[in-house]
Image (cartoon, rainbow, N blue to C red; front, side):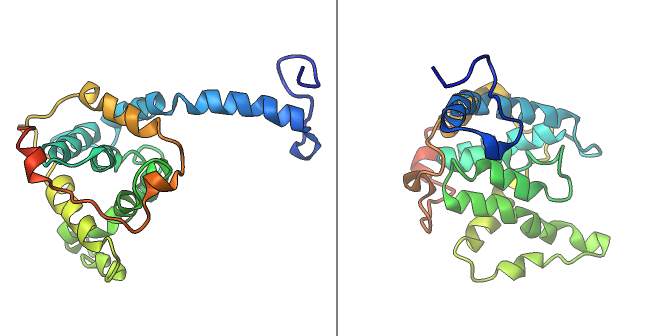
Length: 210
């Protein structure tokens, strides 16, 4: 039916593939992509074995960041971005923010993607001076439309989320939000909403979540 026999394509070099073969492969890719949320949650769980030395694991930090966002009344885009902002730590410790941003980019608002991408520079305000670095690395982004959002993201949800006594739920609490976000049509302009901003804190929603 696909113009070739068996369970795999015939070609060994991509340039030799036929339309029928690529249509066949597209089915596998779509099926695999449908499991993205599940793999994201598995990668999140793996952060429990990430960077040591803090009072809580990187998973604990991620969960705490996410629940602080949720309790502030933030929407799914913000909560999932806060939850996954360090998802790149295990594979890319030197550019984890860029990895996390790329994971999120097809499925959340541009505002959130940029904030996650830039948060490493903004976080340096709190520690870089202790290590001979530049605590004002964020200034390279001065004037950006989402500059203030990234500052608030770091101040409210990121730098403050290392408290072992903070009431923090497990991964299961966030799973429905992650599933909703990663079930969206990838790269949909109606999702990306380039140039648009949503508040990180929505008091009337926050009041229902406490």
